[in-house]
Image 1 (tube, rainbow, N blue to C red):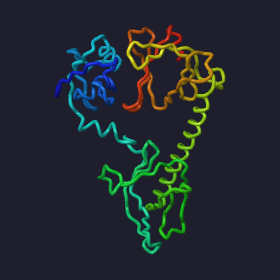
Image 2 (cartoon, rainbow, N blue to C red):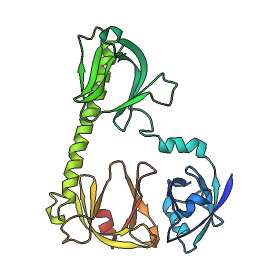
Image 3 (cartoon, helix red, strand yellow):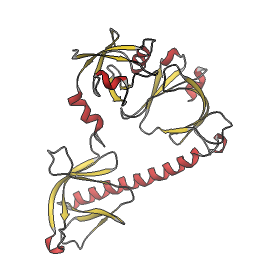
Image 4 (spheres, rainbow, N blue to C red):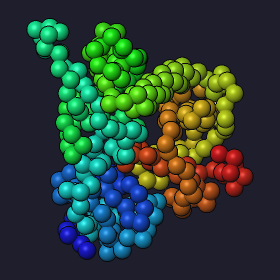
Length: 310
């Protein structure tokens, strides 16, 4: 059911908003100081129709194609769901936690160890490798969070409380925690340690990817795939031929195969790939981001075989 009709007039080649998903598509981002911002469009709006064409059953690429079909004015019928969707889109580490439960958190007052107090809090380890804690399991606003990069998790048998452990990093405030039983403590130590290890692996992967960014295409060791792709730019129909190298879930873009370094890269962890009809190109495909605020990519090749190779 349509809640509102908004009109967005293109300026400088752009409307100023991005969409996410398919059947239906949802407004996922609105750029500042653009026509979309002043039109009344809001993040979380479900797009029902574009210029009187119903798009509820249209794919993402079909809606994008329709929006860039030549008109400088878009009349959008939308269903307003901002009160429901916006918090989901914006909340860091949104989604189901990797692990959650009650733990005892040690609070030490400034006056010293005599004022140490254990307080029960609800803890959630989320997919962004952060450990959040809340007053209780009914709260949605965390009291605090710990990003687990470069931390260690170890038992603390001399804490004065059984089943206790600490999550610490040199030069940073940590957490001293305790479970209600041995099984719970062991499980928490395992999941937190695994998250710390995953953070370390990600840091190493990012360091290697940053180094590869400065290399020529031929200097990237053992690439997973390489060759020319047509890549869609910021503006619809602005296809550019780029030499691309795929290495360890990272796609590097070069002006051509003889470039000294990459123009840029995109880290593809969590992305999905699917066929596309973008720009009416026969051998097109699109790469869909795991989060709506991340960028959507379109490519096409010259042959079906090359498309399958990529």
